[in-house]
Length: 290
Image (cartoon, rainbow, N blue to C red; front, side):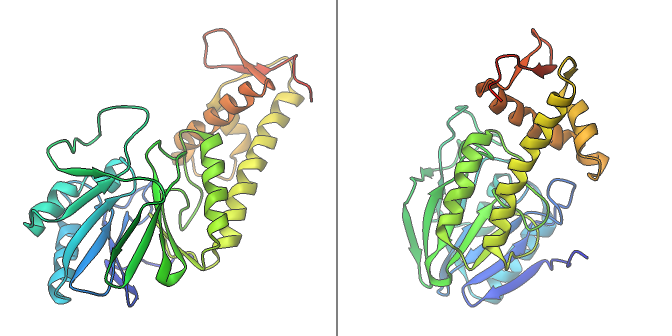
């Protein structure tokens, strides 16, 4: 049974989780945002959704009760449930000295939502950022999005995984090749604990990362099996989902089809399947070497 995530959780002496209060099929109980450090000025990782009064009230309460000011705000990636609350957070803080940091997108020049009015400093891979009680290394982990980063917290041997790895279920991604590389990078970090962007704390991180990797490999095998068993037929991503994802709730089928489409693009590059003209259908490729 899923454990209930409180609005505010004191997870360690230098980690406070503030729930984004934006539950949904893709966000689970909501977006997890984290305050890191032990001193007066600390670091906030992610900012939740735009115009979420409940989240801002929770964040405000934590800051006041612990006499915390924010030194730095780091955004894991551009998705609205991680970046959208930035204006509200800055309005709450009323502190122009707060540093806002984010890795640049590689696919589009614009941001959704727009953060151009703010003085955003561009993060670099392997950049080190410190506040009292929290020394983090920024690791570039594309795949979920082109600008996704995670944080490795030195003091706790912990990783803040954003949307690369979730506390429940599996994640969606834009590029499977990059995503698999990012999972292997997180595995190399050998974290003792993972604090995900959604869902509960992951106390068995190595097992979970290995599951994510094996799960994607198994999905690829299942997709290829459908094509091999129906060599003359064509399939759309959603038709493959309906065959393969029988235990997945139907409200998640669209997200599953999104993932399947990226599996198909990977298999196309490997010449194992091909696209049927200009349609959304795919077929088993005769030039496959399998």
